[in-house]
Image (cartoon, rainbow, N blue to C red):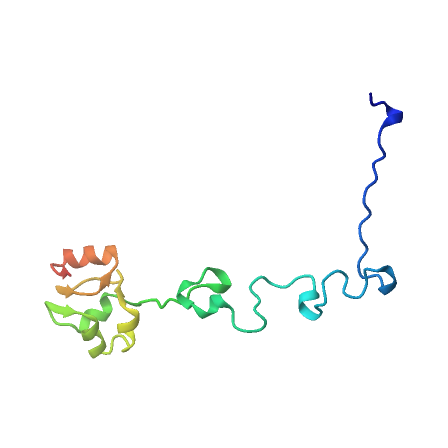
Amino acid sequence: MITLNNLPKIKQKTKKRLGRGTGSGAGAKSGRGTTRHQKAREKIAIWFEGGQNRVIKKFPLLRGKEKNKSKRLKPYLINFQHLRSFPENAEVTIETLIEKEIVPSDAKRTGIKLVNVGHVEKKFLVKIAASRQAKLNIIKAGGKII
């Protein structure tokens, strides 16, 4: 039977005091092996790779958010005012917009999007991406979207 006078003594293990000189037995490398310099320090960023470029920066289209945000190219935005130079029933494509110098030649790579700004005055045959409202206005004016 266990009574108060028969209880075993509970002794907590004292915490090892590291880095308090070589005489303490836990000085010098302080239990971190023989490595010194950066690996012996307390905090190193998880992504740190010894100074070389991080893996996440090597794959620009597979990035996350904030600091490592994707560098995806956004399309050029054009509106109905840019289409005034086109004749009635004209085909609006990336090539025709580049020919008329409405957008730069790298628009083939990034793409073009027609947004609903201004009024549609003519019928057009549109072969580029368009916003929902822009599509409705083109159809109202008698044009087509392909």
